[in-house]
Length: 103
Image (cartoon, rainbow, N blue to C red; front, side):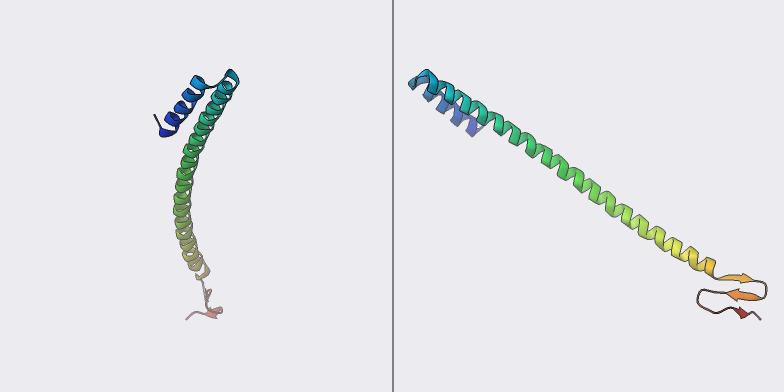
């Protein structure tokens, strides 16, 4: 049992033993609401941890995809350079040179 629950049980027991019915009801309501709020807080903390884990996974996937994209872009640049330098009968066309007669 958590220290908070033990503390609430002590408070509740005190009120149940020493105070009239209305105060008993208030004490029970207070303790019930407190425990419900603690439970909600715990669930939210757990959900937050799950979201953080999912975010970490997404960030890792994103980094992997960025690396793959950069590799593909480099391959495409290389292929495009090869395509831009095409020999035709009598002429050489190059991305870096003006068309000229080949020898």
